Image 1 (cartoon, rainbow, N blue to C red):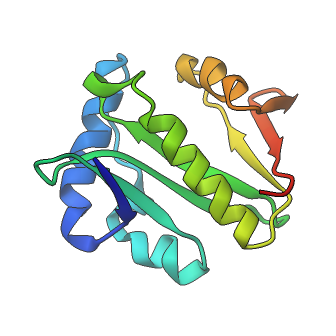
Image 2 (image 1 turned 90 degrees about the vertical axis):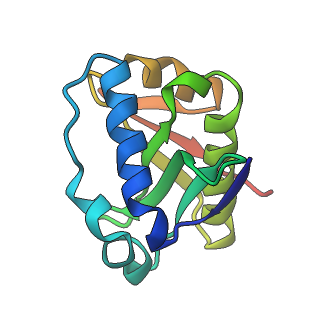
Length: 144
């Protein structure tokens, strides 16, 4: 397994992985429109987006970051292929995003928890995130 900065040639495979992951947890798979142009929606706005690849060069995970209108940094689109969850990939992706945020001078990182993503409500507290309002958590980054 390797984690790389997103490359356009992996777009369709990433979208397929995300839709499959949503389907596996009983959600109606719906496309996030920002996936159609990662460059414009992330890189051109100064924010990274990463994908994890397996030994067959297939996308097995992804994560990005974005700023809200108040300048708060949010983790965006953490997805892991449904049949490899709970093997540490999600934690590695979050750690990579947090380290990148630290390097870019952010002091904290936020996450919005969707009501339908019950696993997120368990996952993020295990990684040091604390709720500060309903469906929102954040983590103080400190010094690496």
